[in-house]
Length: 364
Image (cartoon, rainbow, N blue to C red; front, side):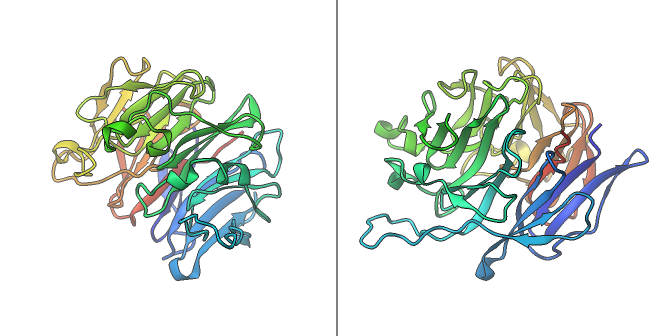
């Protein structure tokens, strides 16, 4: 069983470790500071924490394997906007919203998704970053717009384990984009998605799509799951086409996790709707499918079933490499763990700061 996880919160980064059969939380790193995302790189054992310090800007820290000390490294920086540009976007780095490691054949390569919608790549473990200008300059980027934030943002980065040059990213709101050549060129991958919050003529427009979160099955890499603003979608052809899936109670939500080996198995945390971002019936639940979305089971055991108004953010649901252990954190500071594939849950804490991301250590 995976024995280490990280919880990024509004007031610090916590570690969760399994000791003598019990899961225990550490004291926070960066106490009091908002940690927007965390990455444990299984290739070399380094851990990365992105901080969002408001007036003082975004910061990025790295802790090398075997060390207790954090070292501040570079953050992605946007180039100056060209004079006379009619681009309404503010070319200022506001937040690191996603961090992912490159492939096993790319030591030192990291990807970062940011607000306002730029993708960055580092070739030296975060010591320097380069804007992926090919995506920043795609026709139609001017039509991207903010989903959960006032500005567009990249929150999902899915590296293909078969081919490190193949990467799919999710943009709120701007759709899903795939590169097959390491970021030289990009193609829009939204066929089948529907943005029902838009006027009828724009429902299927790629730039209007708001994928809340996209995840890839490592063992079946052509399988992708998307929790979209308008529902749940699944692709079995690397995003070439998406098929809608109906879940019990509600298909609205933000988080999705997929089994690392079985692309038919995925988990979702339903909320009522965009206008009511709270659990259905004020009772927290996790929907699980084992057959690609044909049927679902709903796990409630151990989760609060009355007077519950917790919301689970995009990165607040994680599954470990064993496919059985899951971790879920909420905006109200609740943290739950399941060791039976989401059928039942145990409360780890009810008093953490609002949780932005939960992530198991990537032990390769």
